[in-house]
Structures are given as C-alpha cells and as structure tokens.
Image (cartoon, rainbow, N blue to C red; front, side, top):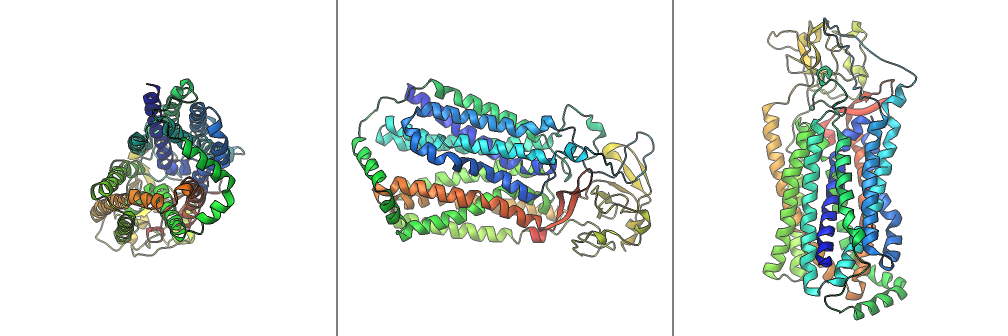
Length: 561
C-alpha cells in the first residue's frame, strides 16, 4: 500500500515540477516587461534554476541515499514552493505598474503632449532591481528539484520488482508530460489578465493584451504553482525511510557500486575514452542547448514575427507543441518495442529523426512575415521599406517642429496602415475619446504616404498584420508541431543507444556525467547568449519612468530569426 502511495506521490511531484517549470518559461516576456530588463537578463534569470541544481547535486547524490529519502524529497518540494512564492514577492513590493506613455488621460477633451515624470524615487518605483527576487526564487526551485529524480527513482527501484520498474517509470514520465501543458495554459490565462487586476480601474488602462507594453498577472501563476508544489510534498513526510523489497536482488548491485566508488578515476578515464559516449554527449549538448534557447524565447518570436499576442502564443505552444512532444516520445518507445530494434536500429532511428526535424526547423526560417510597418523604424515616412536602428530616423519634415520625444513608445495606428511610435511623431494635434477608445486627429505625417486620399486620424495601438501573415502563422505552427513530434520520436531510441553502448558497471556514472555536463553547458549558457543575440535585433527600446533603457518594444524580425 505504501509503495503505491509513493508511486502516486512521486508522479504528482513530477507533474508539479513540470507545471512549475513550464509556467516560468511562459512568463519570461511578462517578467521582462514588468522589470524593464533586456533579454540577456532574462537569460540569466532562466539559467539560475540550473545553477541552484548544480550547487547541491553532489551533496544530494553522495549523502542522499544515507538519509531519509522521502523526507528529503518532501523538503525539496517545500523549497520549490518557497521559490515560487519568492518569485511572486516583487509584485507586492512594487507600486502599480505604470506603462510607458506620452499621453495624459482626461474624461473631457484630450490633447497629446509629452509627459516625462521624473521623481527621485522613480527608478526604485519602477522596481528594476527587484528582479533579483525572481532570480533567487528560480534558484531555490533548482535546489529543491535536485533530490526528486535521483532519490525518488532509487527509492522506487529498491522496493519494486525488476519487471515492474519500467512500468512504474513510464507512469511517472507520462504524468510528468502533462505538467508542461497545464503550465503553458496557465501562463496564457495569466498573460491576458492585467498585472494589477483588482487594484486599478481597467477602464483607464489605454493598452490591451496585444500591446508590447502590456504586462499580465505573471505573479498569480507562481502563487498557484507554489501551492500545488506544497501539496505535492506532504505525503513524503509520512513515508518510512525504506520499504520492504518485493524481490531481493540487490546484493550484486551493491558490490558493483562499492567497486565503482573505489575505482572512480579509472572508470572516468574509461568512460571518456569511449568515442560513442563522447559523440552522444556532444549531440545531446547541441540538442538541449537549442531546445532550451528556443523554448525560452519562442513566445516572443511568435509575438514579434507573426503579430500574435503573448497569451495566444503561449496558448498555442501549450495545446499544440507540447502534446506533439508527448506523442512523439510514446511513439518512439512503441517503435522500439514493436520492431525490437537493436542498438544499430535505434541509432538509425535517432539520426533519421534528427535530420528530418532539422530540415523542418530550417523550413520555418522561410515561413516569415514582413516587419511590422513602423514609420522611421521599418519603413520611411513615405511608406518605403527601410530598416533603421537609429532613433533620429523617427524624425521627418512633418514632425520636426513638434518637439517630440524619440525615446518613448506609445504607438498609434494610422488610417494608412502604418504604425507611428507615438502620436506626436505622427504629427497629431488633437484627440477625442477616452482610454482604449481614444482617437487622434489632424495627424500631418499620415499625408506623407503617397496613396489614395485618406482621413488624417489614428487610433491607439499598433496596426494589425495582414491576412497573409495570419496564413503564414498557420503554416508555421503546422511545421513547428510536426518538427516537435519527429524530434521527440528520436528521444527514446537515443536514450536506448546510450544505455546499450556503455558497460553495465559504468552506466550509473555515464548517466550522472551526462546529466552534469548537459545541464551545466546546455542549461545555463543558452538562455543568456540567445537573449544577448535577440537584444541585438531590437529596433526600439522602451524607456523607464526617469530615463534609462527599458525592455525592447519592437524587433527587426529578419534579424531575429
């Protein structure tokens, strides 16, 4: 009975930690905007999970088996829950979110004019330094996650029959696969809710969830995932240190383990003299690096390239990409069992799926939309394609006498289909309406585009992308889902190749070293250098309340891809 309880509890922990981790991935764009930090900092925050994991992995691996393993797992769950709550803390320390704008709202007549508030406490109010709490919380999550897999699986293997172990592992992994789907769905829901929901009058908020300045209720999801993790850890405090073995076949394993400890350095030398193992490590490192970097910034890519809202991008990943990955892993295992593939056959399947998925990924490069049409950044004021990273190109003859701010991003969509960085740069002179319904009139720069006569008005927000872009997004999602499925099909055969190509006395060491190397080099650096490269593609940086560079508002999609 206690064995079944442990199996259910461990499965739920696998779900909870996947739920927690995927929600973190889905919230990086909201965190970036809330704290006005570049993508490079987001990469550092994302990598802090692996840093925390590596800080204690040696201690847990060595001392964990000698201590009360279920209670260590329970303590890990508690630390992960505390990490989630810590991540949400800055929301309660900060004041209300004040998005970047150049417009004063009035219920009567509205005139556009530059508003540059500057107070001594404004940088602190913006909360740019409070991202350290998110860093710390994510690191605590990494520390807490460390004992779950090695101690949980070893405890399971100790009491279960040898023929049942594979079934139990399959159950745990299957439940764990569901976690990311729920995490991304929760991320999509929270991204649609305004960050200060319940504390501000939403009628006076002049932006919507499609705006690049919009910040969703990112903190809410961390409270939910923290509570789920807290519940997941409770059963482990009531389990015994060990359970009666269903079948005692551990004497030989114990001897081999002792010998491995005594011959650690010679075993390590033997392991890294194996060319197949080195090749597997290198391919795993490349695959994991690419996956971590891609999944971290994929919602932002979909938002900037295809004009999708952040919540929709996260939602699409949750209901389409992740189920395809789960189905691919199951399919790979089924193929191995159905055709009883040898190590050579498994290697062929793994290589084939890798090549096909790479070709599908390469195809996505050509399924791109044109840059959003923003005057002075991606097109000239006459409507001709012209990408510029220089802020001076935002000025034109139609707005040079308006004393406009070149730093602030408060986009308006003109009737000619072109977006202007703010109403002043569009040459707008008057405005009517209130909140999201505000309309600007007499915008002189609209007339610079040589098209059929049109009215000289503009509305708040960026212009929508063309219908062709929506069609391209559907093609992109189809190829993306197919690529995720094919790539995942090679995961199980690749794992089998690793297990069967290593001597039985080196398997534990081989798996441990692979985990250490891949998590260190494939988990920490990629979000940082992916973020740094993405920052290089930024066309328009946001501005903090008292100056200084904030989060990026618009990217050159050609450079982004």
